[in-house]
Image (cartoon, rainbow, N blue to C red):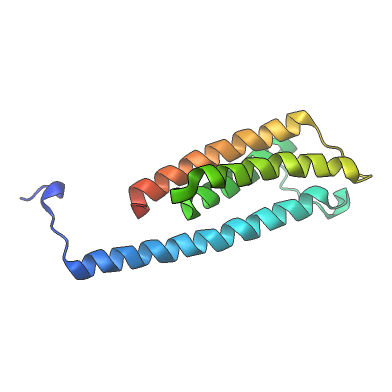
Length: 135
Protein backbone atom coordinates (compact mmCIF):
# COMPACT_ATOMS: atom_id res chain seq x y z
CA UNK A 1 0.00 0.00 0.00
CA UNK A 2 1.57 3.30 -1.03
CA UNK A 3 2.06 5.99 1.57
CA UNK A 4 0.84 9.52 1.12
CA UNK A 5 4.31 10.64 0.05
CA UNK A 6 4.33 8.00 -2.70
CA UNK A 7 1.52 9.66 -4.63
CA UNK A 8 2.62 11.11 -7.94
CA UNK A 9 0.70 13.92 -9.53
CA UNK A 10 0.18 14.18 -13.26
CA UNK A 11 0.64 17.47 -15.03
CA UNK A 12 -3.11 17.97 -15.49
CA UNK A 13 -3.76 17.23 -11.82
CA UNK A 14 -1.20 19.85 -10.84
CA UNK A 15 -2.84 22.37 -13.18
CA UNK A 16 -6.28 21.55 -11.76
CA UNK A 17 -5.00 22.04 -8.21
CA UNK A 18 -3.43 25.38 -9.18
CA UNK A 19 -6.66 26.49 -10.85
CA UNK A 20 -8.71 25.64 -7.75
CA UNK A 21 -6.19 27.47 -5.56
CA UNK A 22 -6.39 30.57 -7.78
CA UNK A 23 -10.19 30.50 -7.66
CA UNK A 24 -10.20 30.24 -3.86
CA UNK A 25 -7.63 33.03 -3.64
CA UNK A 26 -9.75 35.28 -5.87
CA UNK A 27 -12.88 34.53 -3.85
CA UNK A 28 -10.98 35.32 -0.63
CA UNK A 29 -9.85 38.65 -2.11
CA UNK A 30 -13.40 39.66 -2.96
CA UNK A 31 -14.75 38.56 0.41
CA UNK A 32 -11.88 40.26 2.26
CA UNK A 33 -12.54 43.68 0.75
CA UNK A 34 -16.33 43.38 1.01
CA UNK A 35 -16.02 42.31 4.67
CA UNK A 36 -13.67 45.16 5.48
CA UNK A 37 -16.04 47.64 3.80
CA UNK A 38 -18.98 46.24 5.79
CA UNK A 39 -17.03 46.54 9.04
CA UNK A 40 -16.03 50.10 8.14
CA UNK A 41 -19.66 51.00 7.53
CA UNK A 42 -21.00 49.58 10.80
CA UNK A 43 -18.06 51.00 12.74
CA UNK A 44 -18.61 54.63 11.78
CA UNK A 45 -22.39 54.51 11.19
CA UNK A 46 -24.77 55.65 13.91
CA UNK A 47 -25.38 53.05 16.63
CA UNK A 48 -28.95 52.37 15.52
CA UNK A 49 -27.61 51.04 12.18
CA UNK A 50 -25.18 48.66 13.87
CA UNK A 51 -26.30 45.01 13.70
CA UNK A 52 -26.09 42.97 16.88
CA UNK A 53 -25.72 39.25 17.37
CA UNK A 54 -26.62 39.04 21.03
CA UNK A 55 -22.99 38.38 21.94
CA UNK A 56 -20.89 40.90 23.79
CA UNK A 57 -19.53 43.72 21.61
CA UNK A 58 -15.97 42.60 22.39
CA UNK A 59 -16.66 39.10 21.01
CA UNK A 60 -18.31 40.63 17.94
CA UNK A 61 -15.28 42.87 17.31
CA UNK A 62 -12.82 40.04 17.85
CA UNK A 63 -14.71 37.68 15.54
CA UNK A 64 -15.24 40.28 12.81
CA UNK A 65 -11.55 41.13 12.61
CA UNK A 66 -10.54 37.48 12.89
CA UNK A 67 -12.63 36.73 9.80
CA UNK A 68 -11.24 39.73 7.91
CA UNK A 69 -7.69 38.83 8.93
CA UNK A 70 -8.14 35.24 7.80
CA UNK A 71 -9.58 36.33 4.46
CA UNK A 72 -6.82 38.87 3.79
CA UNK A 73 -4.01 36.50 4.66
CA UNK A 74 -5.50 33.66 2.61
CA UNK A 75 -6.02 36.06 -0.29
CA UNK A 76 -2.61 37.71 -0.08
CA UNK A 77 -0.43 35.03 1.54
CA UNK A 78 2.56 35.97 -0.63
CA UNK A 79 2.31 39.50 0.80
CA UNK A 80 1.43 38.66 4.39
CA UNK A 81 3.09 41.77 5.85
CA UNK A 82 1.05 44.05 3.61
CA UNK A 83 -2.12 42.12 4.47
CA UNK A 84 -1.28 42.47 8.17
CA UNK A 85 -0.66 46.21 7.78
CA UNK A 86 -4.00 46.67 6.00
CA UNK A 87 -6.05 44.71 8.54
CA UNK A 88 -4.36 45.97 11.71
CA UNK A 89 -4.16 49.48 10.27
CA UNK A 90 -7.89 49.34 9.50
CA UNK A 91 -8.65 48.25 13.07
CA UNK A 92 -6.79 51.23 14.51
CA UNK A 93 -7.97 53.72 11.87
CA UNK A 94 -11.62 52.75 12.24
CA UNK A 95 -11.39 53.20 15.99
CA UNK A 96 -9.86 56.64 15.47
CA UNK A 97 -12.59 57.59 12.98
CA UNK A 98 -15.17 56.93 15.65
CA UNK A 99 -13.79 59.93 17.51
CA UNK A 100 -15.16 62.09 14.69
CA UNK A 101 -18.69 60.66 14.87
CA UNK A 102 -20.84 62.38 17.50
CA UNK A 103 -22.76 59.23 18.46
CA UNK A 104 -19.69 56.96 18.60
CA UNK A 105 -16.60 56.72 20.78
CA UNK A 106 -13.21 55.29 19.93
CA UNK A 107 -11.40 53.46 22.70
CA UNK A 108 -7.94 51.95 22.98
CA UNK A 109 -9.44 48.80 24.51
CA UNK A 110 -11.69 48.29 21.48
CA UNK A 111 -8.75 48.82 19.12
CA UNK A 112 -6.74 46.21 21.04
CA UNK A 113 -9.59 43.67 20.83
CA UNK A 114 -9.84 44.25 17.08
CA UNK A 115 -6.07 43.90 16.73
CA UNK A 116 -5.98 40.61 18.64
CA UNK A 117 -8.78 39.27 16.43
CA UNK A 118 -6.95 40.47 13.32
CA UNK A 119 -3.71 38.76 14.37
CA UNK A 120 -5.50 35.49 15.15
CA UNK A 121 -7.26 35.60 11.79
CA UNK A 122 -4.10 36.53 9.91
CA UNK A 123 -2.33 33.54 11.45
CA UNK A 124 -5.15 31.12 10.67
CA UNK A 125 -5.56 32.37 7.10
CA UNK A 126 -1.83 32.20 6.47
CA UNK A 127 -1.67 28.61 7.72
CA UNK A 128 -4.64 27.74 5.49
CA UNK A 129 -2.99 29.29 2.45
CA UNK A 130 0.35 27.59 3.05
CA UNK A 131 -0.99 24.15 3.89
CA UNK A 132 -4.13 23.87 1.79
CA UNK A 133 -3.60 26.23 -1.13
CA UNK A 134 0.18 25.68 -1.14
CA UNK A 135 0.78 29.40 -1.75
